[in-house]
Amino acid sequence: MLSEIYIRKKFGIEKREGFIYKGVNELQRWVEGSILVIFLILFWFLIDYVFHLLIFYFVILNLFRALMEWRYEREEKRYLLTLHLIIIYLLILGSLSIFYLNE
Image (cartoon, rainbow, N blue to C red; front, side, top):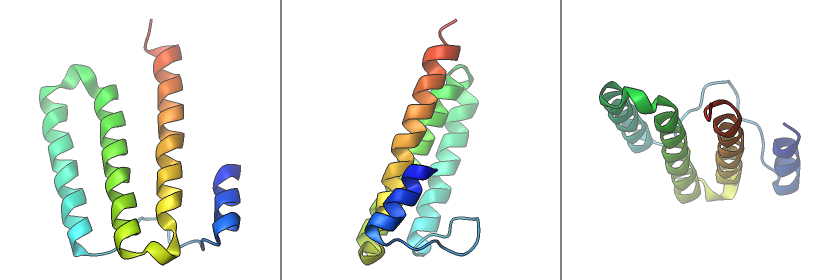
């Protein structure tokens, strides 16, 4: 995305190696796993609200990632990209919900 490239250049954020996200420490991995388990349980009981749960899951997960990146790797400024990603998620999913789920 062009906005991500702009943010990377403006704040001097380097790309990480690999495609899969790696947490900053073990605590983050445990909490993200717990968030996933809670999401799957909620998914089982609230099957009618799958789209809303997905939005909720992505926002909560990425807010937690941004917090951990800000707390433990502040000098790398990767939390800015994570916060940017949340905004992009909300714009895309909000647009989808307006145009496709209101039928």
